Image (cartoon, rainbow, N blue to C red; front, side, top):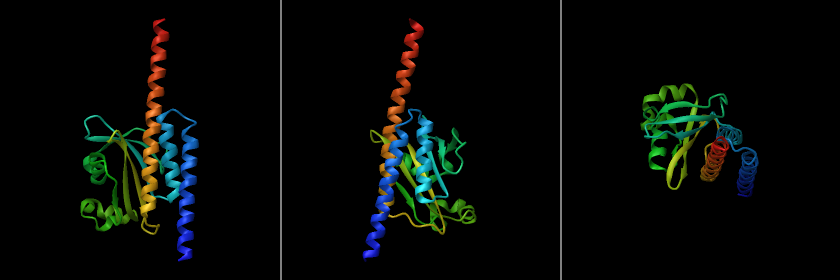
Length: 189
C-alpha cells in the first residue's frame, strides 16, 4: 500500500512539474502556434505518447484544424473532417472529455480497428479546450498498447492543461488584436 501511495505522489509531482514547465514556456510567447506546439510536446513527453495533437475549431463546426503535433512538429495548419474522427467530433460537439480505454474493442472505432491494431494503439483520450462553455478546440492523446493506462488523475491533469491552453489562446488572441489595432492606427496617422 505504501509503494502504491509513493507511486501516486510521484505521478502528482510529475504532473505539477509539467504544469510549471508549460506555464513557464507559454508565458514566453504570445503566438498561438508556438504556445500550442509547446503544450503538445510537453504532454507527449510527460506521458510517452504515440500521438498528441491539438486541434482548433473551424467556423461551421464540420471540420477542425490540426495546429500542433507532438509526433510531427512541422504540421501546423491541416484541415481535418470531423466525420472521420468520431471521438474528436463527440468531444468538440459535446464539450466533454472522451476516453476510449481499448480502441480495439470500441464499437465507435470499428471502421479503423485494423489500422489501430497495426499501429499498436491502446487508448485514445480527447479533452476539449473550452472557452465560455464552448469547445474551441481539443487535445487528442493516443497511447501505445504496451504503455501505461491513463488514470483519473492523468485525465484531470490534461483537463487542467486544456484550461490553461484556453487562457493562453485568449491572451494570444488579445495580443494579436491589439497589435493589429496599433498597426492600423499607425497607418492612419
